[in-house]
Length: 88
Figure 1 (tube, one colour):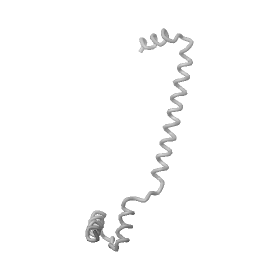
Figure 2 (cartoon, rainbow, N blue to C red):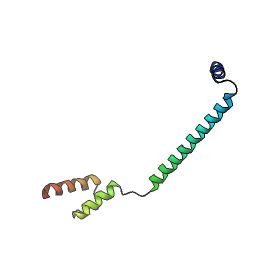
Figure 3 (cartoon, helix red, strand yellow):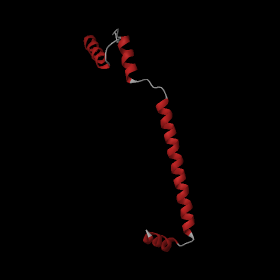
Figure 4 (cartoon, rainbow, N blue to C red):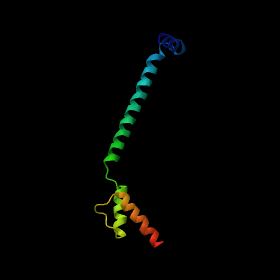
């Protein structure tokens, strides 16, 4: 660690070290700010109600006249596939 500090002082000189430290601090601040914005946007996206695949599946089944009560989504999907094969 001491060797790295010595090399930095030799390369940039003692006057540049505070400037480098400020630049690193600003860069870290920008990174933290961007990370926080991304996390907030992701959280809002997760909270936003989306039409799930199950909703689409049930809606499609109802349009085809398939009863969905008491059935698993796999059973409903299978019935939709069978109806599609019959109508093709």
